[in-house]
Length: 160
Image (cartoon, rainbow, N blue to C red; front, side):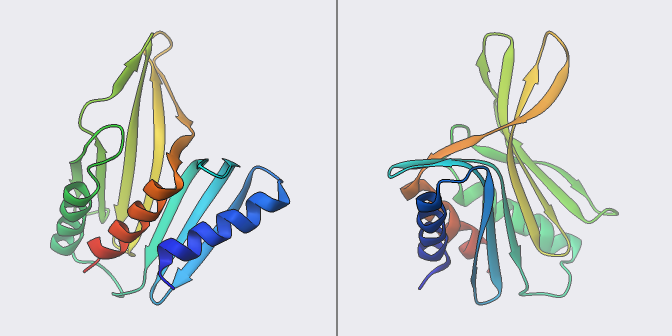
């Protein structure tokens, strides 16, 4: 069974218990996906963060990490805003991707933030910036089950 099918099965099992928030994890081969769920239903789900880890390499070189970020940006084009590689910190061993253009609503701007690091981990969250207070905070990511499956498959494919 693929990682995408396993994570959906874990979401279904957790949803039947009905205790939110909580985390679900699925493993397939060298890959692991964890969702920090805040809600789930028959059509969609909400989560505060998604963590993906791959053990395909002991450590990613700066070039390989940047290439991974480029592949994620090229594959994951179906979220609310397209992702772009924003920063590559060679010394820290991190690559940051963000939404190309945040979604404005009233005095708020929302965007996706993805951080990759040389240990082979990816962290995805939704960030809201309040222009009035100049403060950042995380917000729930919301997506359908089908988008979650596609995202899971694309994360696994981006590691290659």
